[in-house]
Amino acid sequence: MSRHSSSHEIRRAQKTVWLIVVILCVSAGIAVWSIAAGPQIVFSEKSPIRFSPRGYTVSLVLFVLPLLALLHWLHKRQDDVSPERVASQKAFWTTAGIVIPMYCLLDLFLANTFFVFPHRDATLEIYVWGRMPGGGWPQSIPIEEFLFYITGFLAILLTYIWCDHYWLSEYHMEVKTPEKPRAEAILKFSLPSVLIGLALAAGAILYKKNFSEYPEGLPGYMLFLIFVILVPTSVLYRYVSSRLNLRAFSFTIIVLLLISLLWEVTLALPYQWWDFQRHQMMGIFIKPWYNLPIEEPILWIGAGWLNVSLYKVIYEIYLRRQVQQELDEVSPEPLRELLFRPRAVEGKEDS
Image (cartoon, rainbow, N blue to C red):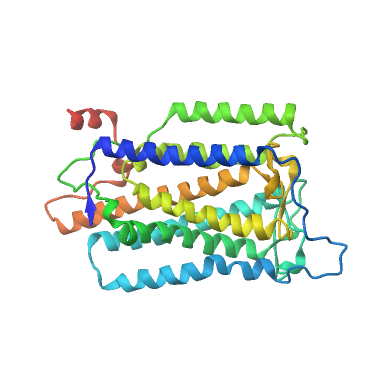
């Protein structure tokens, strides 16, 4: 079931989601504020004990099993030839074709800048070349990193699609048909978002220089999150947030947070499958979570938003094209007009 919602309902749902995020973040921050020291890391390179042989490799089952179940559900929908089903499947694979190579390329260039991988025994010990900050391309990145980007991305995005079209389909937001012109462009520059990004970057630098245990250099990881994920995706926020199934997105983020807490905080950090280049962090560490940098939870939510918002844009483009193909009298809108609708056209349509 899909439905149209009034702008009031959409704004109320958006406020509810943000309120949930704020309450959870504030309450969690208060709960951990009094902790003076974090728990001890289990792994030691000098110990003869094999703490978690192939642990990183085996842990990918957290993403593989849900992915297989969701792919089975997706395959069962093959008999459904509705425009929504066809568009969602095309958008899913198109988004995967864009985001997975992007993640892997970023890992090749930045993994050694932000991370270390001390526990070799936890992997298959198959390493991929990665750029070192000082130059050179040693074989230093475990193959599991790339398997995670593939399986993790597919599982999280399919979770949203499953919720949107099945589990929480009552709140699926129906795309307007071609007979009802859409007045707004998909991509819309947001000066406030850029200014907020610059303010956040300045704040991160000031905090690192004045309060961090590692004041040297810049907070590279936080600057990466701000200018590669948060600010760029802000051009989609106004458009996507009014069309997103916010309950499905909330469910997806909660699942992502639960898996991340189990996978990274409970397993990866104490057994040192990977750790962080502390001098690249802003300097706020969550002590009960084995000094997890604050950047990492921001990444969990930011990456989820990036994946889902990009999928939603591609889904709507495919759906509109699919409907237009069934209506011979409607000529398909050019992609450039879908993405960058001129202001003059917007004003005319709004009048």
